[in-house]
Length: 573
Image 1 (cartoon, rainbow, N blue to C red):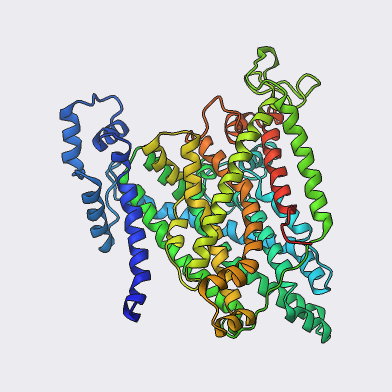
Image 2 (cartoon, one colour):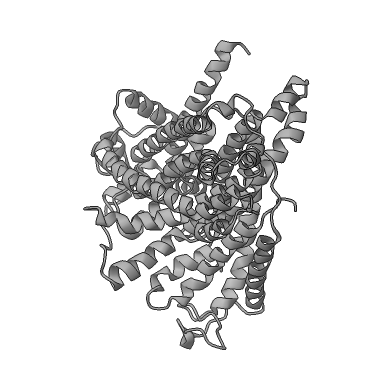
């Protein structure tokens, strides 16, 4: 491939992904099999009969396209001039509603990302201090706490904050967006679980960096502890910074449920409402904005990574090594997994469908150890049977995401933005709506929607670590010695990149379960009778203040799953 073609391949690929995303959204009405005019008529005039004359009038008045290709090309043509189009439902310019919503979402998501980073750094400080002294084994306590926080369902945490802090204590507003006070609870609902993910990644990065040869050299040379801690933190942070920036865009697109809880006029809720109508111009504009932000953020992540590493990234200054993990984290993981497994086994011995009307919302007792749900069904039974669905599917989805993420991250270029950064900007909710339009709502559709986006953070993490590994002395020596491409992948990159990405995938197991839960919450996942944990949370969140035990069981199951994932370190002894 000539240098000119090589330089053009990446921009063309990104442009193709952007146009493809716009076309996919533009085809939403046709994928669902409905007439676009019928959807618009139902949204604008509920009582009007959908006769041919009425549908024809809607098409003429709004100039609806005859097919998705024509509509998407027209949208992209207007976009070049800065015109985001006109809403099919309201008839107002899309920019008038979309840009203020984007401002709200950027404010919430940006603040939540900053809070998440600060909390993650604070959780990692003990590990940094132990690593500087040469006493760190595994990821430290911060990894376990991070795993637990990462498994907190955002919408359950949001409802809990509203019930306790806003309603119970009267300290903060329950909804709206009129001032800084309205930011606190939504930011906590989004930022605390995100801090868990970042803390787990940062703890793993610290453990990996602690085994590099320069750390031992600095300690042997008597470099003061503070300098070693600072260098360790900067080196570990270089791995996590791209993830922080990805988190900003991911939060922008995936906060629809939290925005609904707090009645925030943000981009996520606006895009979701428009997609359900469907109001294609609004959804297309929202997706294009998210994709544009994804590209900017992806490029910013690569630039920040290079600036933090400095000359080491190109000067063979990195020598990553595998650091043995201690036995105590594994024993703790086994203990937590045993408790979770016993609870699941106890639930499997009970009937999840049996109803006792007299026991509706009954508190925990000998007859119902975990209480009863609003229909009088045993919560322990539904917890156990739901675990088979939630945990089993989450593990399978994480395994698929791991395989795809490793392949994309190792075989792609690590120093450029690309398709992964474009796809990262597409919320799982929007993908779920598109999949549901084609295959119908259900658990299989929800799994497919989650799988389509779950590999992206793992691919970005992989490419970041691969860039560092390629800058190491042993990799440069192997290349100089004439090692082939597949030999380098198998013997020099996978042993270094694989373990931390596997640990990242373990952290993503609860997140896959949470993504399924969010889709079930919106009616795009498991059916009403399913004991799946996400569906159970969707059905019982409204009873949190009156009967907290109905929410506690599936929520605690997700948290324990996160703790097990955080404490399970696959590195060899």
